[in-house]
Amino acid sequence: MDKRKRRVRHGMVKERARILVVGGGYVGMYTALRLQRRLKRELERDEVEITVVTPTRT
Image (spheres, rainbow, N blue to C red):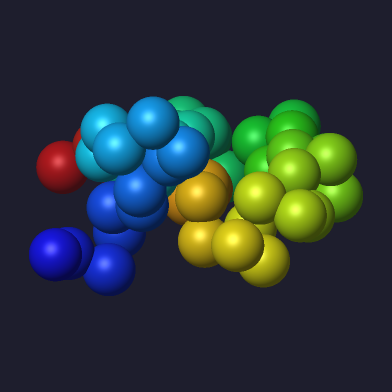
């Protein structure tokens, strides 16, 4: 089984929740840090993943 999947009590497989923060400026980083504090237990149990991306123009 993939490390990112977890078994729940009733036997169903549950995937890790993924949160995408678009924008790495002040507000994006502030949001990611707030989420990190609020979801501390879930992050420690590897139940959630937070990713910050900054769109760039090419």
